[in-house]
Image 1 (cartoon, rainbow over the protein chains, first blue to last red):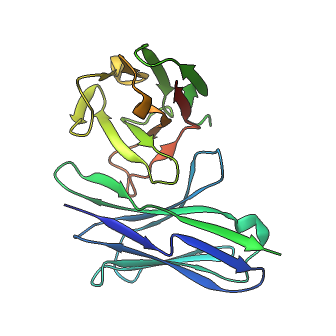
Image 2: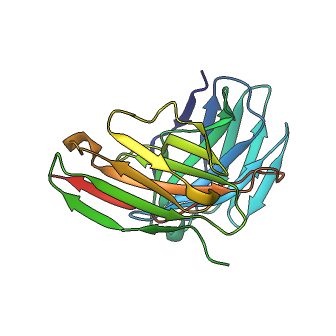
Image 3: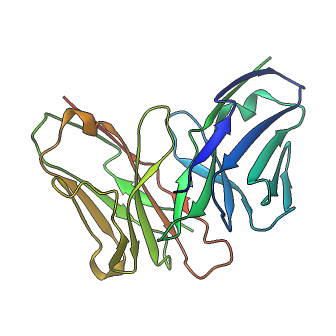
Length: 111
Length: 115
């Protein structure tokens, strides 16, 4: 059964600092998604990673995928307050190609 | 292009009452999902439709939950009777299966409070 873990679950960081959120998944997955959720809002798709070594960047966020280690990372460069949100990773597996979400990482960027 | 539409956005009911949620997916998306999201947790899949067919309803509590997707477009999720533990956000998402990414797009959700 596919399980997805994230760490840390809570992250408080200062502006202009760098940090990384880690996403581990337990079985083979052919896709890895990253989503952002603002309080009281729905999920917004950030990245879709398909293959080993895939790297995607958008602004201050960069996501990567290591399928051998079953690990994806979301790196935040020079954080700004607007990045404060909850970030979810999700992997795909199981009989019905089910998308399994991690518990989320709640990020607070402090001025 | 319009996104996934859900209604109502908020619903407050007393336990044992019925409740229904409606979802209109993005035009052309053949796959529709209903998720439940508890506070501080990630979404959990309740049911997935491919066109009109429910292809994964293994996590749907069938004693009280039901869903339908008539004509392969709009979908309705119903709870009858509602229990206190059903208080959560119910998210609808859609995707185009067959695309390279099979990326899901989420609606704004319905926040259900059961008193």
